[in-house]
Image (cartoon, rainbow, N blue to C red; front, side):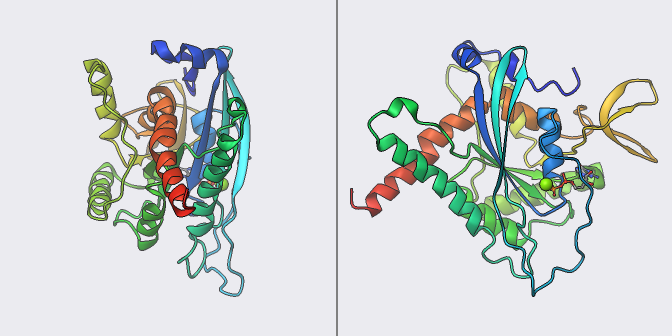
Length: 300
Ligand code: GDP
Ligand code: MG
């Protein structure tokens, strides 16, 4: 079952309609170059959406040549047990690479707003049945594995988007930190997030949820910010299993092993447990707020 994505096997009754029609998800990834964004996407969906490349990060950004932040979109249909997932990944290369990153969140916020505006415009037209949902349903924010705490740019970015998207912070390349470093880093990150009043995605709890659902929910959310490792390489463990992982002189980090990293929990959040909730929160809370304040500004 290595790399099994899992959207075809959702447990809840009310997913039946979605299973027939297929699922769709628009996922944004933000974070510095080389933090493993493309690799994580390939690992999550078990498909090479991004060519596997190796590049060297320029050691000193050139002030004469500031890298603009661009928005690049990749779409793919993924099929599992005859169930389709239409996936769109919105990547924002160039983020955080300049000498002066003061405004590097701007093109990203513009992208989120534009997608809301497109939806609003389509919704206002007469035939609403055909509205395509291009809104951003979740934003994975990649935190550099420094082991210290959040950087000013991390905080600025998160504050700019937290009321517009379901924000999900992850600790990139967590295999470069020890277990103890990860625990302490997580704590400091969560303290910063609390102190700054940054809102993260939290799944709604319903009174009629069964205990099992509630426990699963809490177990997933307790891992935030998710310490992740990405890799699509299949390697053999000393005890002869074939796993997706990264190999080191001291051993192997297994992606799909919950004792090794939080990849599984992140995938459960995004795909197995809360894909519908991410979309509902986007539609009913984030987009609604955007729409209301936009209409107010326009005097409608
Ligand atoms: P992006 O620029 O954020 O899209 O980063 P990439 O996914 O292209 O990865 C950049 C480099 O980091 C590649 O050489 C990857 O093999 C490596 N990489 C990706 N994920 C991980 C990880 O979880 N741990 C480690 N140690 N390296 C990783
Ligand atoms: Mg990339």
